[in-house]
Image 1 (cartoon, one colour):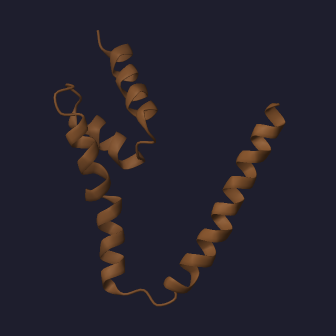
Image 2 (cartoon, rainbow, N blue to C red):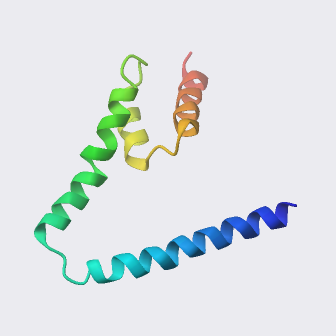
Length: 91
């Protein structure tokens, strides 16, 4: 059972890689400055701002919010793990 699940995950990842490369390959042959700026904004502001807004009132330090925002939330689990880490480390 576990082998089938892992194989399915591997094949799904491989298909995303192949189709993503097929779609992005031609688009990235001639990057413009707008594409680069949008990519940088997406990796910083657009990614971190929603995390910062979602964690308002939790008492997390700015460094913790930036860490969660930078490494990306992958659903509710990342926020739960972050809050659990804070609960364990607090006196």
